[in-house]
Amino acid sequence: MRTMLAAMAGLVLGVAVFAAPAAAPTLRGSPASMEHQHSVAVAEDFTFAATPREVEYLVARERLVPVKGSADYALARVSHPYARPEVLTFVERMGAQYRKACGEKLVVTSLTRPKAEQPGNAHRLSVHPAGMAVDFRISKRASCRKWMEETLLELEKKRLLDATRERNPPHYHVAVFPDAYRAYAARQAPVQRPTSPSPTVLRPRPAPSAPPEPAPAGQAERRTAPEPQPAAPPVVLVLLSSFALLFILGWRIARHHGPG
Image (cartoon, one colour):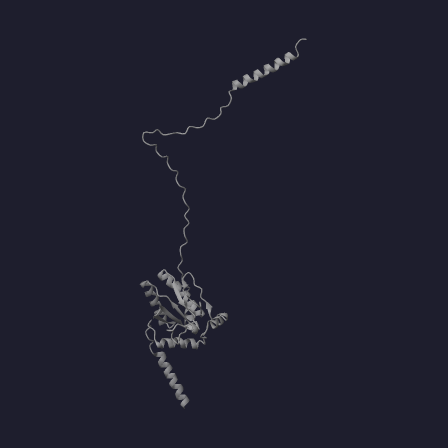
């Protein structure tokens, strides 16, 4: 009898929790949000890496995948550039949308972080050691901050992630819920990435020939006279030379065969 009553009480509690309206999404963070992030990681049976060597172990077994940066997002001083596959998908989609909306790259400042390298102000339930979280730099441009925060709140409203705007140091902390986000991304069309126009190659035009400079006032324009070419010998001189040669030749022949 007690078992039946306990089961009924659990069922009623579950229905009440499911029917309760979800809290309005916020970027202020809370102990309840950290507990929720941690409970998701535990339910997924994620390993919370304690040391850098354990991070390498998870990478070798492809539990964590490399996050290398792209034309849409960049990494800034990320000690361990690895994350759960769903986090990588989130970063790639978010980076493309952010760059298209803001005209600048999304900057990642932290990904997987083992417990041994957690900062002093890190929450004890942080999911960074599980590779389930990513930190983004806060843009200096108000329009980009507005777009980023509205987008994160919209995704949080759909229960795909939990985002917090941290103050020390300033950044957006985002814990991605793998199962929910994987199913969501599978239903979405590929993100249209902004394309930079190909640079137009301009062929240099030939420089126009400069007109001749006018001669100074009071001075006649100088013209370059053509160099004299050697003239062909006149025909008369050629004929006279030929006759003289024949005359000399005939005289010598007559002298040689004269009377005697």
